[in-house]
Image (tube, rainbow, N blue to C red; front, side, top):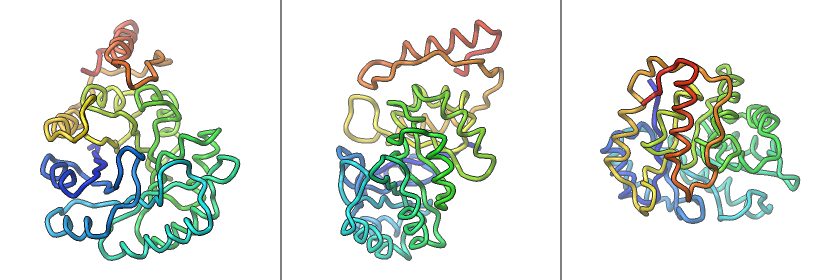
Length: 264
């Protein structure tokens, strides 16, 4: 059964996501920076209530993913600070060429051991997703959070599907990036991924919605009967500020044109 990880930017949001049925929480601070390391007290507070796994974002600042020696030392210290409370960690490091920093990523994986680590969407800033894929695996991360290098997971379904096929049990490919109830079934149907990532925040809103999270969970649990694989999915809109309804309709129409049933 497909699982849903929800990115939460406060203890209150984490509790809401948990009560709505999230399978895992990614605890972060500063949503507008794309997520940074949360205060330790947030995790301490929610651990008394939340029983699903909680992965903690380790990111000293917003902006790029090429960190100074001081910032890297801070990341290692933060991993140690959360030991005993976190169930896993989320981070991503790139070198000066914009490629996965295998050595430093491996060092953080070692600091986190034996807890699992996810390489976050810094992956989507790399110049070659398939090279980055192998580098992340060699660094020891167990999951990759990615939109397939596109502006959203819906726009990146073709690359995501290729990465899922390449994974072969070596790593979990987790689609993320504007994943919402209106498109999660489509992303699932084309990628065949088994874990999905969302903030649970409906488009145009600033806070997560319990109904949105419950709807995504319901859609992930629904069978995908009748969905035949497409030779090539049509290119959806890449700007999340635009309505993706037209993109979904194009993808549904393409499925119908080859004799498959639309996934919803």
